Image (cartoon, rainbow over all chains, first blue to last red; front, side, top):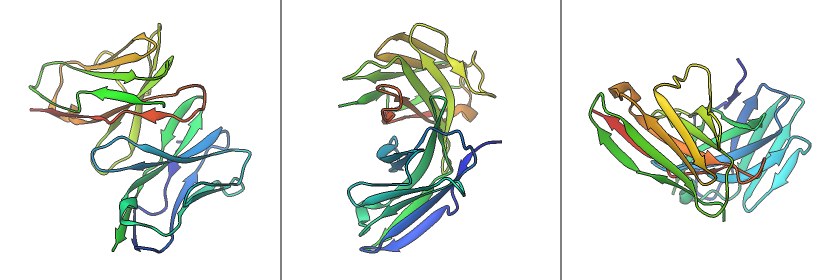
Length: 110
Length: 115
């Protein structure tokens, strides 16, 4: 079936380092993609999104890259902080629905 | 802006009873809301799309008679878990799209425990 998935289920980084979280998707018809951060016991929090006609978008300390050729999406977090520890999901918007990938748990070591 | 409120945050109920979860858009109108279920260490699974003034659209494998959805106004959708069983214990989350593809906003989730 069609899905949005992630390569790495867990990622541990040192405080101050950059983090890269990857996501593979299989549906070429997706309208756009969104990265969410979810802390334990809370709902997902919007981080950044990118339209299917773009290949890069930057926010505050975050950058999303979209490679449509290989159907790959990544989230880069610069100067990772302990407060960035959470589960990160990529999600795709397709026909008005938001479909989530598996998620990567990011752990930041002080 | 774009705040979604979900209540209750936690609920414990006895097996066989029904539980209602509310999802409200506080500062915008939402013709469409979405309900997700999330088991521990897993992703969010879309259960259904709630449409104001019409029937909800359920994803494959989701029992519509068990998970009743009502979207009676532009700011409120409710999910009722009927005849709950322990396997229904999960984290239920709603979201709303302020306008098409604006950026879905999520509620804080409801932890349902069926004993």
